[in-house]
Length: 91
Image (cartoon, rainbow, N blue to C red; front, side):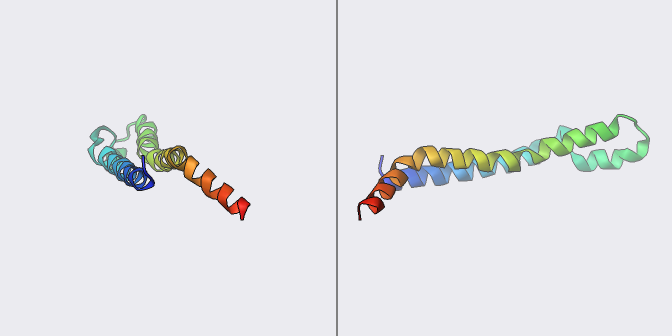
């Protein structure tokens, strides 16, 4: 696979991961933080736990997907980085 092809695949994977993150946060109606926050005024004792779980469920994506994209990039471009590094050592 050429460098350009890998770069295009990497860009598509990055865009797909970003879209999946936004789709997940938009379609996860069971953990809608706004609705749970409004229901706080109903004096339900289990609601703070539900609100905390909803917040964690919504906010784990921004922590995980960049790490996954970086790991995929390292795997895809390791050969090129190693080749460029060795070429600089020769000169």
